[in-house]
Image (tube, rainbow, N blue to C red; front, side, top):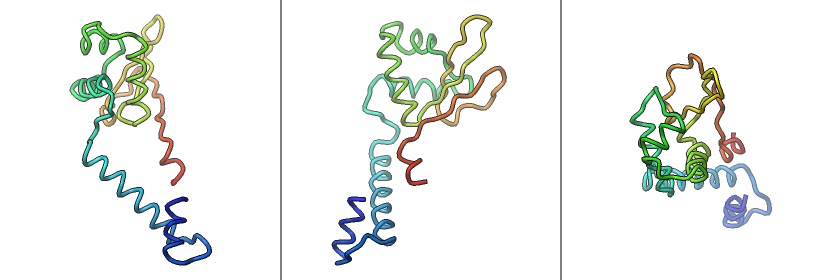
Length: 136
């Protein structure tokens, strides 16, 4: 809305109108596209980037938290740090998870976005996307 207000002021309009909103949205998209082009899928969190790379390599088989802990970090990451990095990937829509029924406590299997091809024996957990839900 602030960008739309600036466009309305530059247009000497007393009201924010649809063209001002469209221009503000176009500016936002340009900024998002530029950031994506510059930074790609990097998150700013070294551990999250490392996990994302491993999930991409794992493909459709994904990785459990235990596999990520042991194979990606050789056991040298705290549970809180691992959870935080996975949350970052989930919030950025770089990774999704599914609960696996193992006969005991269910385990979480993580996949790089686009890497889930087989939903046998897993229940899908949705994604979080805050800004895009506002602009539709």
